Image (cartoon, rainbow over all chains, first blue to last red; front, side, top):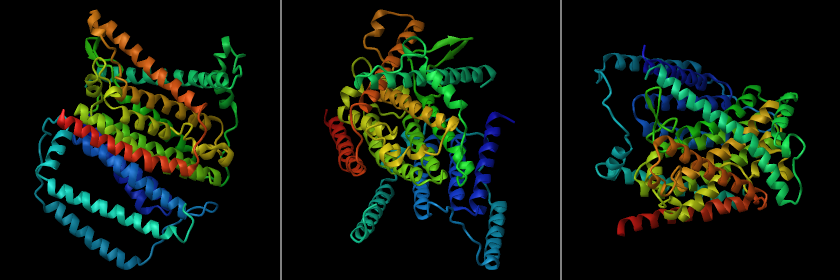
Length: 171
Length: 341
């Protein structure tokens, strides 16, 4: 087993293990915390696939942005003194059926699909330039549309936050 | 990648680690001395010559204290939080180049950087954004109102200033055309430091760095008059020492990052005209790098003891209404200059 393999299994175990904690943990804080390690594991897998830009973007966006807001939300909604929002289990039977069907379908698809497997990775040194050029030439329109979508979302969020400010003291 | 390569990498890591730890110890000393001079006091002068051994006495004192975890605290996260803080503070240094030429050691060419990552700048930003976790989680896990408020403030503050930090960097990236830190340093040849080319970006980045390291005047997460000790109120002994260490290690890290990005890194103007051998070049450049970092560290402490703390609304106003527009204006200006010049 080479170093790369060892690292792959380490990151894969980290990703799957912490994802299991996310799913089964009763405490929302623990789930959010475990999600941190899931994101880190995925970033590690990206590094092994020589997708350096994607790996760092993954950490910046998910770990540095989304997850911290998630934790922020949980902490503010939890009462400080007696902590922990817990997640409960409802609708056990229907959920099991739906998840069972989904799992079966996925296993069927994974086993039947013809995977485009490469023996070794092409020797890439840095993907950033390539990604940047593609985004501003070939994929310019989707890129701009995504940008506008995000801008609209930001403005919408700001509007919603603003209207509640009038009734309540700003935090 | 064989054993020797791994050994060389490990040696670099250990050297970096030891140097930073020793620097932190002396930083605590200089902080106390500088504050003393500014406030017209004497400062530590009893332990060792001129009090130079004071920080070591402090460390021993801290480690001998009882480690108290509040009964209602979340033990696991309470213990993990300082580890995250310290880990993040140290890992950023891995991508900072400290000298240009390579030296030959055991028949290998050794680069004067631990890991020359392609996406160096983004790596720095990503790790900076992870630094929030140590503070926020420690605040939450302590199960104390003051700690929680400190943690939340740190999260809000760091998210706000991270934005202007990232945006002020874009000017540097546009000039250099690379995210690799070694490229950025090579590009600042002679006197063409990014400080000269990007004065506005330098100022916004510097201010954002102060906010990111939670140093005064942005030390709201631990504002003593309002929050007791902020996020580390419930920490004692070794864990408190770790937070303390992380704060100073963060200062060193941001000084190193600022030096690399704006003060030319290891570049010494006209050094190559002296015709030195590579070994001497490396030595001089490491020295120059450390001098620049030392000056920034002094600047950090100078500001801390000269400028009063911001109020929370002033902090947010500055971050969103001054820093952010300035950083964006800097990008537009840089783009226009690059296009028309």
